[in-house]
Image (cartoon, rainbow, N blue to C red):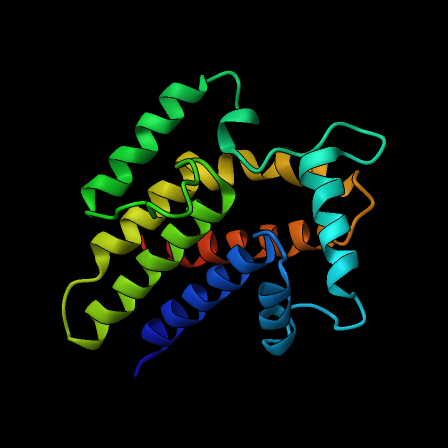
Length: 186
């Protein structure tokens, strides 16, 4: 494998890890996070669940932080954002889960899509194919979606005084590293 192939695989794993971090921390999910070293095991499942609820559903002395792009980018209108996201997913024939029923603009959905793009890039490179279309799609998706609303999301998340505040920082670092890699390959 070459460095580009390795980088795409590492990015895919990092995005999937972030998707797990920002998913509801039921006991099974919490155990996976601990096993993969994504969270400190001293942060018990109950504490992480309480932080999740405080940050994203109830708020802790503040309004909760929405996990949906459209709720952070009111200037564009949520319908337009959802439509653009669905076009991205449909172009690559990516279907949203029928069982989870998450919206196309949910943070976890966007993270999983970026992981999928990175996996497709890696697979194309391993087969000696053209991976540029997947890199271009990743660059466009980050610029038009995740990177566009992440600063506002992170600012609100850091104000929650929960364990998730640090995860927002880690996510921002991942996105910037990915953008830097994609920018250098233009």
